[in-house]
Length: 192
Ligand SMILES: [Cu+2]
Image (cartoon, rainbow, N blue to C red):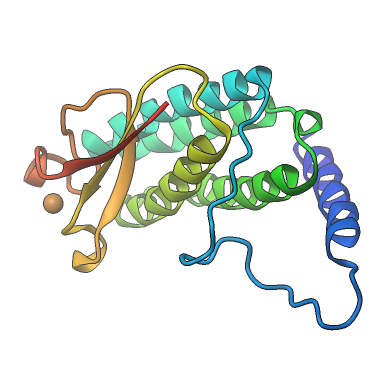
């Protein structure tokens, strides 16, 4: 089941890549989202937004597990998010939006696997940071299906280079240090 979804995804991605990027010589395959590049706006159809919203609401359990420094609960939550991700229908997207989602999906799944496959909170929190970045980009690009999402940052996480998380509340509960630094952080952006 899982493998067949991944294989289907890769086929779609490969097909799409050929269609999008076979423009002959002179076309550079630059990374799609470098910081300076204009952000593409691909608001997805409402059905896709609802599915993506399901991934976000399921991800709140993972955030809460990390807030309470519960590595076992984090592994279980990561598996549930993978299941929510598998319900997101690729057929609702096309062209560049599909390419973008395939990129985010790969990062989301890879980091969920890292979390599900570890009992080490340090590793889980690193993976959660990458997961949160990709989920943030997805929600920002495709829309959050009518709910308010808070994007918060703790500047001390990741050895003081900072890390972000997504929440359904503007109240700060930092998932990166647990009780050591529970209320450290700041809401940087809200997404709808
Ligand atoms: Cu902090």
